[in-house]
Structures are given as C-alpha cells and as structure tokens.
Length: 282
Image (cartoon, rainbow, N blue to C red; front, side, top):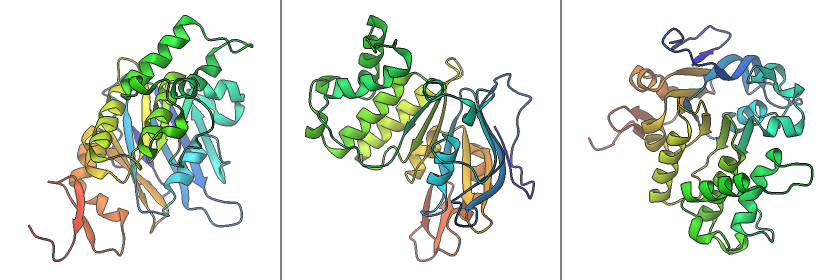
C-alpha cells in the first residue's frame, strides 16, 4: 500500500515485503465537481492485490466522490486512475465490469426481480452475447448468496426484503461479478449490528492474498472496519488531502483524530473507535 499527497505525507510504503502487484493506482488525482474546487487534491495512492483498505472521514469530506472517481463513475478533475495497470477511461463498459464491481450506499430500487435474478445480473460481464447462464454462472450466483447468508431467500422478490437484506443482495451481486477489485460505499449502512459484523468478516475473506482480490470500502462502522483492515485511507478535510498507512500504524499514530477537525471527539486506539473528547467516562 502506498499513499501520498502533494505535501508528500507518506505514512507507510512497505513495498519491499511483498511481491503482490497493484490492483488500483491513482496518480496526482484531484476529485470534485467541475463547478467548484477539488474536495481532495493531488493525491497518489495504490492498493495492492489481496489487501482490504478502509476509507474513513467525516460526512461531506469527499469519500463518496473519491470512490466514484476511482470507479470511473465520475471524471477526475486532474490526474489518472488505473485498475490492473490500465487507465479506467480506456476500458469498455464490459471490460471495466470484469475488473471492478461496485456497491453504492443508495437504497436499492426493488423492481420486479427475485433475489437470485438480481445476483445473476453480476454475471453479465462473463456471459455470452445472448446472456445465457452456464452451470459455472449459476454456481457463482449460489456461492455469492451463500456467502452473504441469503440462500434461503433466493426465490423471494427483492421488493419484499428489508433494506438490510437488499444490501446483502447487492453485495452478493458484486461477489458474483467475480472481479479483482470490489469497491463499496458504506456497505453496512442499513444493517443491524450482527449483520454489520458478518459483512465485515465476509469482506475480509473476500480480500485475500491467495485470490489476489482487493477490497476498498468506506465506513462509519469504525471498530468493525478497522479490525479487518490491512490499510486505512483517511480523508483530512482541513487540508483536502488523503492520508494512508497500514492499519496498525494509523491506529497508533494519532492521525485518525484528523477525521473530525473541530469536533469534540477523538480516536481511542484501545476501543478502535471514536469517543467524546471531553466528559466521556473512562
């Protein structure tokens, strides 16, 4: 994992200890909207194969904008993004869907599909021109449903599920897509406590050195996310910069306090979570 800003703020490189290649790489990247100033400016970052990185920061700090830009859903203001060594803009839509699957935080539109049919949409980049499902495609769908604990509801209509269950289905669809990179924006936003922990555990298993698959996710569920992370990407909104490091180093560095500047909270490394800075019981 590598990350820097224009100020050359480098927390960890650790590039000599692994032969894993880069899955995602951003170079001199600035993100935001054309009508305004960059929300995060001039960053260079790399996510290695098999790593799980957690993106943290305050609401409005630019996390979702960064993820949309990295996934190609939004054009960068400057710089470039590469997935598997190829610029995102040089991929066809089908080609990009074979290397990247994305799960957004938006509430899922129900439509008229069953759970199994919804997850099967993730296989489209791999099916032929006619979109016919092979035995391998059906096995991928079944495995994805099993991984998120939704096999029993495979034939239920998506419209009849809770928000949390729908989110699990969207994660299953991303898993069925079978890409080397999975990006998730607040994947546990609508889930109960048990489901949040289960999903974080699942994403930890998805990102593995054996498979070479990488996961980048944003989350406000700080403790569960940090407990499974290899790397932490922190948006410091005061300087419009991205600070990165290995999870253990970031947790003990004090840098996580930069996530909420001017707020009465601090990061407590012993709890892996944020607490009130004043008046909080010890």
